[in-house]
Image (tube, rainbow, N blue to C red; front, side):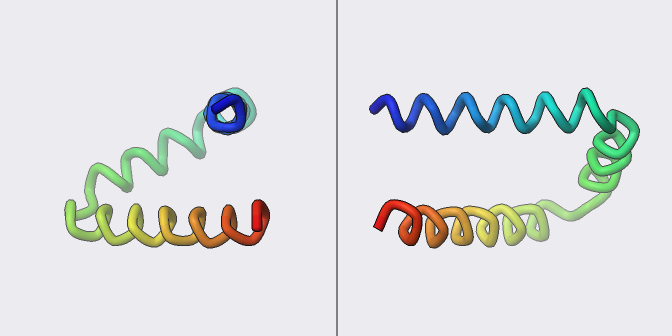
Length: 61
């Protein structure tokens, strides 16, 4: 369970780093995402989820 919390903390660190280092880049990306259809966002989310699960399998495997 501590690994899960560590992973969630790392997500927060990465998100915060992007917002701190390149807020304009982050804002443009959010604006582009708002203009995208929901189905496209779902496909992107599913792809990132699958890639993350595969990477986790190999890292923890």
